[in-house]
Image (cartoon, rainbow, N blue to C red; front, side, top):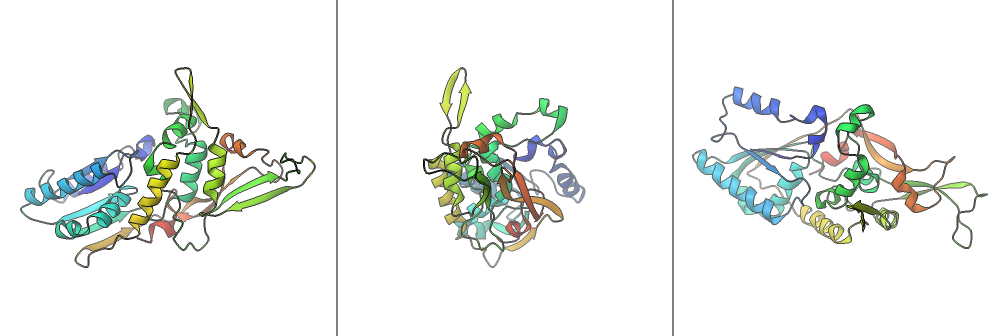
Amino acid sequence: MIVGAMWQIFRMNDVYYFHDLIKQLTDWGYQEGTTLFGFGYDFRQSNRLSEHMEKFKAKLVSMYKASGGKKADIISHSMGGILVKSFLALHHDFFEQYVNSWIAVAAPFQGAPGFIMDCLLTGVEFVKGWQRQLFVAKWSMHQLLIECPSVYELMASEDFTWTDPPELRLWRKQTEENGEPDPDSPSVLERYGPKDYLQVMSAALRGNTMNYNGAIIPTPMNTEILKWAEKTRRILQIAELPSSVKFYNIVGTSNDTPFHTCYGSKESPIDQITDILNLEADFSFVDGDGTVPLESSMTL
């Protein structure tokens, strides 16, 4: 079974990112509906959404019957790995009963810190230049993503022991006693780790709004979704592979991958925290697949 969310559908070179794999499997003799199955799902929803979990359970049962009582070999891609891990944590015995092996490809097991932080603060732009006119605008994507539980679930894990914890970095002007920026003071680089930057992000998004048919609608960081995502991370921590299930982890490497996220510069520091929403991020990169750091994908 191939598991994948429709997350990268917006990138032109990734529209058919499962096509070659499916073709290769069918060339090897796998037959759709008998020995080859797919499981797609709405990437916007939580990876542990009960509806997803029940459909995944039903898919495993139907595959078992269609294949004549054979356990499934699962191939998950990217965020699909988080869905499978959620199912493993919540339905361990069922997973053991129906799964023979699991191949995870580029799974953000510990999050995708730089990419996701910038998505939540400023949105995401999949193409540059004239092609931007053919896709959803960066700010429109921002209004969508800020209400997506799955995006919050891909924030950097607070409990993982990072070699170098991901940071939100801000070049800011020092403030006077009245709280206003001091134009004559030197700029200061502030650093916030995974346990601290949520407060900064919430402050930056506090006044965020969207215009819907002329009505101005507040769209701050969604605290209820954030609580849900924090519970998801706690659930993922209890996932434990059954000894009978073979696990293969394929990771992406040799690509610059966003990790630390910085707004402002020493020469042009931020006046107000809300200025972040109108700035381009300056990333510090680590090794990975371009979105998921190698360190994140290597640790189930």
